[in-house]
Length: 205
Image 1 (cartoon, rainbow, N blue to C red):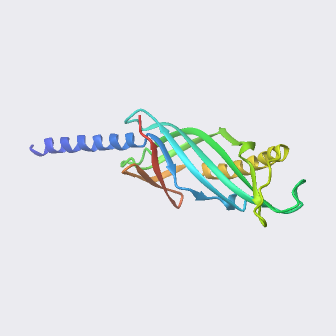
Image 2: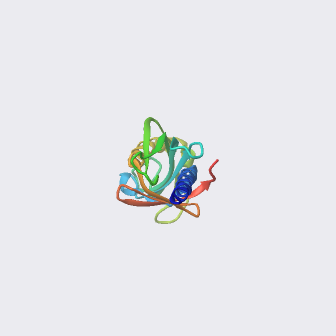
Image 3: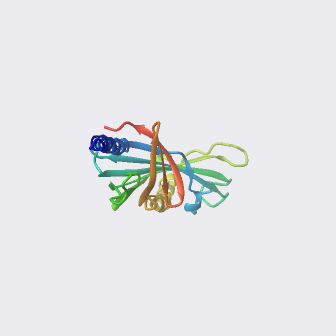
């Protein structure tokens, strides 16, 4: 008979721990930069910084989620390939993309450390601001190249398509976050066969 109170206390502790774990996931998390040049055919180099924003009442097992990325890319521009460019330059582009959906803890996971993501393709948005497109400098002499409005607008639209493809590949790899651990505002998990690390950008509500 004496064992029942002990079991009851242990059960309460486990439930409290699970609720605390679920509450910790709320808020915004930012990844370390990842190289994504292989996913953008027109880029010589490109990096992506991902952010995940989980939203749900404390203790809930599901809620809404938004995943965003900021992609910075560069590409050498060969001499004579563009009107007004007699010498080689390098173009730099920054694009943003986001997608929303829902998240929930996996029902079969008694430890509450695996999360399923259900992203809605219709919510995906991609933007490349023409003001963020720059032809930085002559690759041979270092001379600065003035901005050409019509050129940067056309370049931005071409890059928007390329960045959309790269962002979609990243986003739709996020179907399940395995073995989530949160220690000192650092979230680590496994997606597919990759280990990812995020740091907390904003506190849970």
